[in-house]
Image (cartoon, rainbow, N blue to C red):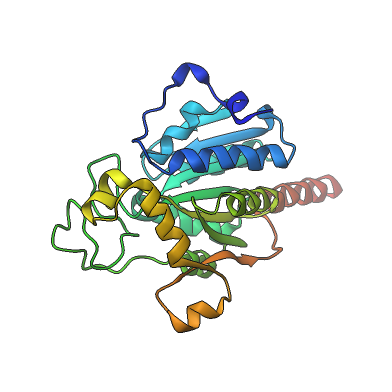
Length: 270
């Protein structure tokens, strides 16, 4: 099937700003789902609030559009109730790491079998261009007109520190790489975090004079390197892309069901 066959066409045209990277992420997420051979009724997409959280409205899967920062809490409930389903959680950098930060940490710690796709456009796009936990130091935003004096969270460092068994980063420029990474993240049995650097020309690009959406995507090409690249040694400011961790660990909902079965067996013996 084509990408359009996974969309709810009645909700189009979509309302993302021209040049927004989130549509690229959505299309490649669809391609990754198809690559894994999943049927529509085997997938649940859960979001919170924000630009990225418009996805469930456009996607023809089981979908939940929930509260700001609480997508992972709802997704946890879905996975615990229906562990056989594939649960994907698209989020924004503010949604996932500000109000939703604790949920992210504990979902990673539990190793719940969820795929969190975090679109990092370095700003709160939907609510007016405020700086987010992932706005780089000294960059401008509506609420940081003279430059942000807070240091950005490194999502890969946070993911690994919190215990995520899969953590990866890519960009909207690297579309084929994104499909492969999201496909692997969906297949992974455990908590998977995929950070996708996504352009926001309307706010972040305009506030920081980064040019058009095309210019910003060229920036992703020039400012990122594969993990282990020698270029990183010569230029520490370059951002690494790729899979940072991919480990097998006990998955929470499976362990929970095993615990229930063990308890039932012990009760029967008694």
